[in-house]
Image 1 (cartoon, rainbow, N blue to C red):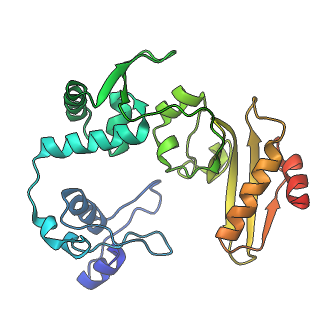
Image 2: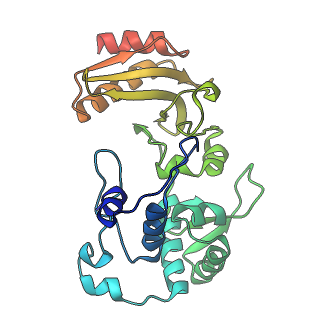
Length: 266
């Protein structure tokens, strides 16, 4: 059940502050999120409106017995820190702690243990003024040839400090920023091409007209010459994935004209 459904089932009424900017949770939602943090309830997916569906944790665990298993907190932090470090390849204590949102102090203790075990190795990174750690399984590929439009919640961009340190890319999600103060748009996705983030796009899926709207297209100063063609390919793929019929590029941003031409010829 969603928090709204639970509130209706309880018959709970509560005055809401309409002018408040942000999450604006009521007491039912706050209690559910606290139970979620404690592991009493879990997530069974989301509704089309992006509302979390809360079940008892025992109802979504593959083995319900595990929902009742007591886990030593230090061992849990150690396990999560190792998982985070493996996913990141290299990072600071802050990077590792942020990946699963675990406490910084506990993460530092776990990192020290993983160093002693040989799972992590201390490394220095040019331009970084803080200690970093490399996972023993991390490898440096000969070349990076992938490309992707990244969700604002993708682990690559979610920790903004790490993103800036690695790519020199300053990024802020602006969905919580009042419209007049936005710089790039409401829902902006960075575009990763090879080993660089070279652009950002403000996208909207217009379900009624069945169009993917590109409301803003902003290339970075070092964007490669063929970026419009690469972007067009990704946008066509995204539109098909969203079951939309067309991609429409609005005249906003320094790449809009080139992208519109690339989409037209795609």
